[in-house]
Image (cartoon, rainbow, N blue to C red; front, side, top):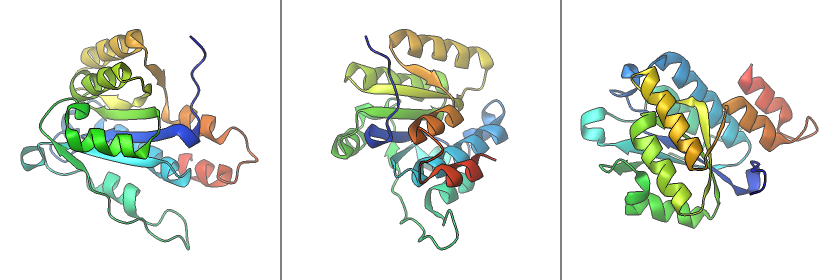
Length: 194
């Protein structure tokens, strides 16, 4: 098995269930939300497709306002704001078992999934396992996942990596996709991270 690398031309960001009533129950929820905001902005800057899921939004609320803004607002002066995105509403734990999500991912046509989500040991882990079974390269953004307990997150990370996922951080993933300081997006990404 060769070394797995993140190439922006083949990557899609998947943000799982960062919802108003679910996020506050996670460990270090404010820090986690800020990580997702920065990562989403960075991925947008690099031109990645982004899929957002919401688990039973009627009960758990919508994607948080800060993340919603990161996905749609003007990132840099003079840029046109992104059109409103449409989250995939689901009641299954693994989004791959939802026809809308699976079809959207297949239409994008990328084989590398950058995975962020809550809870790490439920929806994120089950989606990761299904993606791996379907032959996707999965990079779990370790500082972009959480559970209500550290133990559940730790066990989820162990299980996902044992199954073939690669753990990384949002900053490492962004710089890996940049490949060097001569990239057109380097200054913009650096500004987002600082």
